[in-house]
Length: 198
Image (cartoon, rainbow, N blue to C red; front, side, top):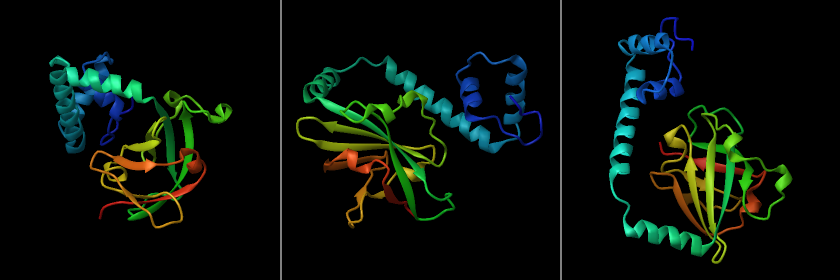
């Protein structure tokens, strides 16, 4: 860990380990504690992480309702395909409203050409990238996108243009988009446009 120099913030993983009271060297623990005394940004991150883990712990104490089991059974009965698509910006993100991203299918349990796919656990998602988790019914072919990014404005309430038509799909505040019937394979190595909120 390198936070000995003044004004250098520890990375998010160290802050998370600090919040979760995971084993980190005592010197690193002391450096983080001292750093938090003067850094408003890291203090805010630590506060958010603590709130998240408090909520997570409270939720995990609640009994699982029968409706959740019913939903899980329904998902299994529906037979869904899972695909993960990584979006990389073509140009650096410089505060533009509309941005072009290159699509790459990085994981699929469908009958895609498996030799070019990698395990999603080994695909790092950089700050400017977006990961799309695609859930598609194998029966109805109804498709739902779940967008994930380190930057909220890249998944929350965005407009997604998947092809040269003017059809745009809007995500909700959590990054969910209902597409209807859609051929996921058509997106591999394509360029899509994303428009963020002002």
